[in-house]
Length: 553
Image 1 (cartoon, rainbow, N blue to C red):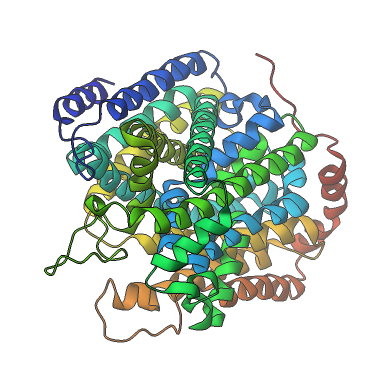
Image 2: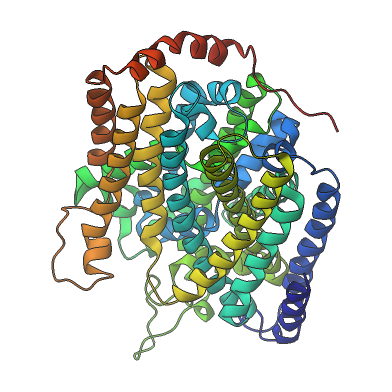
């Protein structure tokens, strides 16, 4: 705690060059930034007084409503990459940029119709409870923890590096200090407040982000008399690619297989992300779990519609503000390559253009809230994998006490926080853009097939799930490493081995086929028992009989 306050003091002392990319200190940014921290600290103190058991720590006692959980899921899912990254993609390539948004959004019907209610009925704290419901505890939890911790590490590195770079640009802070602040806040929220504090941080972040994006889209459309046609016509007129930004481009045409693989990975990866799946155990029953998905899908879909307006609005409007660009030797402006801070800063510059320093400051605070909310959710999922899956159920074999599990959970959170800070500093100058895509690929290739088949197919056995899950994990990771994204861009080799960067079209079917094949070939006594146990699983998954209930506080 003392380190945090020292960091905050240093931040205040060094913030005079805040918002350097857009010129001059931004008092509203500093004020909103500190207000967010103060408000969430009060929330954490309140949540800490309500967090006594593992159920409180991991699931907020199961007492979150469907509407609250839907907002929290949106807050957890909509990272800074969703806001700044997709707006930047639309700014650069128009329609192509929306492919990512569609892929992210498409995953939610999969979650709703296939797994949300069954997750809530079968599990207690995380999705490993579900996969090990009728299958062997040790191999299922080792597989789930291995995949989850790798996904969380990749996600954390990307978020921490993004956080550091973004806060440096927005507030003028030293990179290492920025990473320490984010990591310290994450540890405080999760260690003391658990899921209750994390949920409310995510809810606040979602409300701020939805409000900020709505306001930006409103101000953009107002400049075109609320005519999307006029905005798009102006964007086509000023963009170097002209009318082609309104049609599918290189993202699809250059390699259709890669585009399909990307879409599959994004869609099914959503249904395998451990920090997202964990949120379905925070509601009291399956009905509220279903409501959570409906609300989350609505909020996320609405948000991505706003990024469409923001991206095309930036194309049409930023060209009118040469101060946001670095001019070439001949004085000309390249609106794609000349933007100060790069195209990921499109939304930041647009907020200043349409709303002045006040909206710019608000967006800076929202961006910071976004990062903290996402890393807090990741840390909590990581703590669950270490404490609940590995320690309590693998090493202690179910004999760990509540006090021991809580101690390991909090210790795991601190270790993950320190690790996240160190990795964020180590990877400062590395290209980590591929890491989020790899996290989705692993989630889609390792977690999703095992989760779906273990609850929907009688024939699934521990042997099949274990072999198939690890094959999906290894094949997805190897494919990305051997692709241009890592093999050429990171390792420096001249030519990639894998034909395209996204592995989903290969690794996901491989995992499903392997689970089916090795389950069908498994005639052991254990496999017979697991198939017989499917009836009990099916009854509970569809009726909720015997499912855990919310804890009264």
